[in-house]
Image: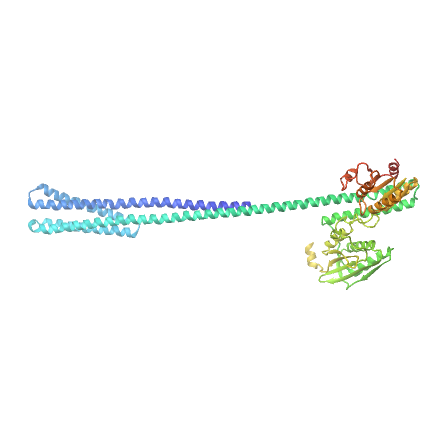
Length: 465
Length: 120
């Protein structure tokens, strides 16, 4: 649980850091790209503007020198100026065209490429016009040519201004598109940061939730452990109590055994009485020791059953016959058996249960009747033993199937050692049945136990081996 | 001596009676705590009080400690001897602590040791 939660938290934190990192990376990449574009644009447009300015200047100068040449055909300086201006203009145009070509080839988008193409075309036009201008100047009839030249020169000036304006527009366009691009990216970055913030807020409530869950879980587990600990302590106390009572019960017959020996020695009683007494007490001790072992087996779920098929009616009749043999009281042992059924049981154990309950009934019933009846309900066989005795004291009835609950309610010379009904319950539970006890309204007690009739099939038996 | 015995084990009770009667004592046997208190009260009313009460602790209906308390409430000088498989420490811890004047015989003991203690 802790590992899983830690994984969730670190995973979410990791995602947030990753997103922030990506944002910063994109931001810096964009910045470098934008600055590169600015450099490229300024590298391309600015020299173009410079060159065009120069061309404009020299064009004017060439026209002026031509006027001077016309006024004074002998002036060498005017001729030289005319010629050098023409050379500079041509070279400037070539250079500008080259820049436009380069700009076209490295343009990042088609529209920027088209811009450069347009600039290139404009330059070509200017070149053509300039060539036309020089062509005209070759005719020496200057007096007539001057107005044409003036208009030609004006045309060139207009074209150059157009080109300059166009380039200025392109430059502005480029800068504004870069700005737009930058703004777009700014929005994306803001978006990512907002998303990361929202995730952080969610993470906070998420971890809070996890913490609360963990806290509740830890509290619950602590409570469970405390309960388990309490149960264990109770079990331990019960075990201690059982050992204490059992050892006390085992000590019980020792006093009268010594007593018999001493009385026989001193001649107060005869040898036979002493031996009979000792034998009875030894048998009692043996029975108690056996029962304590059985209790231990039941409590450790190690009760071994030798299951076989038997007729239940036969088992009951046999047990009653045995009980009738030693019966000294004037009680009737009645039988009201239902339809016979084959039960898959450990016969010795079931007889032990029947014997125990019958012996209890006989022990407490002075007059009247004890009745055993059977019935089949659904998938189980029910055996009921009813007596007309004093009933079970109310204070011990809820715990009647516990160990030693009858200890302070029965005399030591009465048969039984306080473990009989606990063993009965253990045996019936091991058979998959249920045992209950209640007092009858008209007096006396009733014990009832069930034995399941659903037989295990050969396959399930084989599987369980 | 007039002796009241409270013991729920039939064999042991009979043996106490046999041995004490053999020594010439008068013995009344009761089989549980309630019977014991009733026998004590009857004798008290008849003006034939018991010299010694021999009590088993582990008895049906009422324990030896409870019976001892009852008897000492009526007669604080009554001599009581506990005959119990519990040792003295366990007895003193059990509900309704018994006073130190009560003597204790720890089971198992020999009948002659019991007679010696009673006659002492």
